[in-house]
Image 1 (tube, helix red, strand yellow):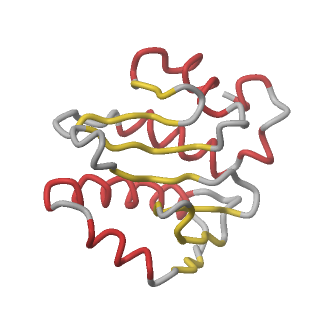
Image 2: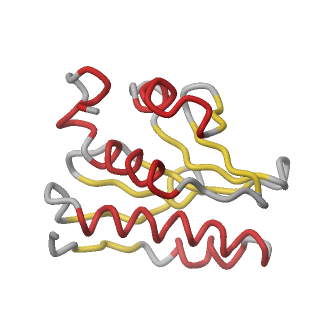
Image 3: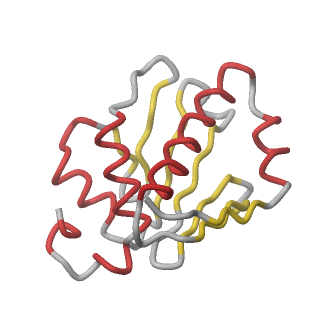
Length: 142
């Protein structure tokens, strides 16, 4: 278990506070999972929490950015976004099939009333946080 240094942009807290009541707790669960996986990952000693495109974003030095958000135009869902030019979402599809709902090669979508498959999502988060160590391996080392 690494000693994680979290660099937090104070604007992220404002963003969390801007979410509707029922959504805020869901987004915070995704954040907690990202932080938990980062803390348990031997290759992640520092994590940046900031806003990218107005969305809470998480970046490890050897990883690919993970963003989380809810949008008013799709009020019944929220998402975890990945860099669309990476192999992450296409790999998640191959490994986890219909465990998740996907948006093209950029996101895993969650319904507000849906139970999150925690073990599988944590594995996805781990792959993203180590992406630059794994991107040349078949199925990102899975």
